[in-house]
Image 1 (cartoon, rainbow, N blue to C red):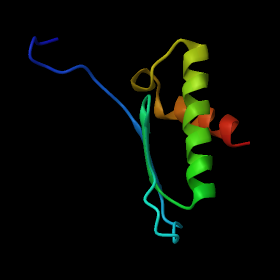
Image 2 (image 1 turned 90 degrees about the vertical axis):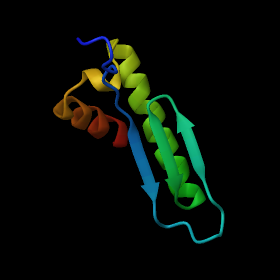
Image 3 (image 1 turned 135 degrees about the horizontal axis):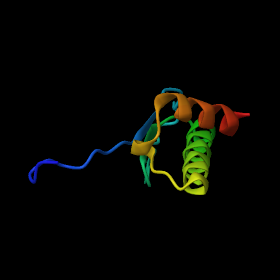
Image 4 (image 1 turned 60 degrees about the horizontal axis):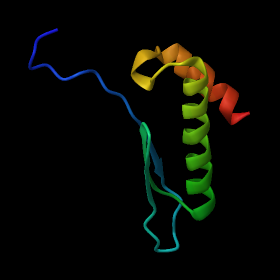
Length: 80
């Protein structure tokens, strides 16, 4: 790896489009940024992002180390 090259990174981005109460919601966490949505939608996005990170931690992996298929499998487990 070249000395001036940055390490690979990854993040989950959640955007809620149903917020109509005039409140701007923004949550940043380990590997994720969530913006907008109603209170309920934003809460669901937060819970989902946290559970994804818990699954990654239990596997001893970071988001940038998994394949898109692995992320899909984790999301399917978390959303159920």
